[in-house]
Length: 435
Image (cartoon, rainbow, N blue to C red):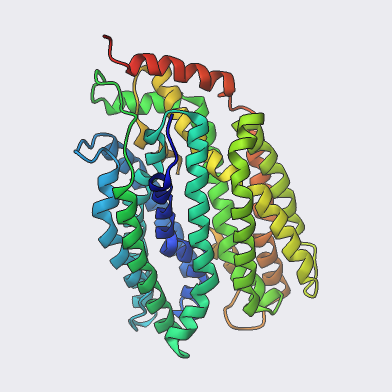
């Protein structure tokens, strides 16, 4: 049984390293359009291309990490050696050289794609790490809960301080303010990457008799219906989350006319997530991972959709709906990663082969800029009614429907408590050397 001591929980602080990634999802669209001066369509295209690139290299990283064998393990070395390139690229991404309109687009695209590449080389092995630290599904739920509590605490710091720090460091120069702010966060990320590397251990290993066969690994992956379902749910969830976070700054600036409230909205929503995250493990033990995820999807999706209804003066109702939605959403966050780890166990249980990195990488696209463009959005001007409607839909109805749809997919997920218990018994026997 894995003991969750302080050293183990410190590893989850690595989510603080998502600092620049959080900025690139939420503030990045705002930064590109309102600070760097790139059109919403160009910014959306850059982020879309980066996502397709990310989707292309993720499986490659998963395959490579599965075949990595070092004295530090399969996944931890990527956290150690990827830290500095990631931090440097984060700073370059939020640097604003005056290269002219096309030059700006090329520079923004190149730095963002490179940042996403560096991020993938760290985040995918890191995401897979929980699956090899323990083979118990409820310990994984606990570990992922600690991970995301620390992760959302990092997000709390970022969302609560990013714009304030940018204003402080910039002194009226938004571009300089963003660059200095990201420099600070990048430096902090290096510290937490090294803490993560130092305080984690990989305990679950693939069978020693397992041969190196990519064809067999990929074939087993797509035969694993549990993983296929989770991959779909993961993609839908990510689109929902990225879409809403990309549009929230526009929602407050152009619909509510309360740009100064964006930070508080994000901070309070993050606190709601942190408060509700500890419910994940006890709820999973009582009702099962699948049932908790379904309930979370339906309730949070409904309240996200309700955010569309309040008028510009009804700020309190908007906050309340968001708090309820985030609290309902919270337990599902660690459970998705827990179930992906369980699907890797399921693949090993059925086929005798383990491909943890491939399972996580293949399970892990931003279209907000395109929708804003279609809605006739233009930055820093009074918005048309069509543009306002598009912004409201991006924050509420569209992500709400997407997340509620996850419940439908999860109805076909068949790894229940009985199955996970039996898998653990059988896999423990296989992994234990004969006396």
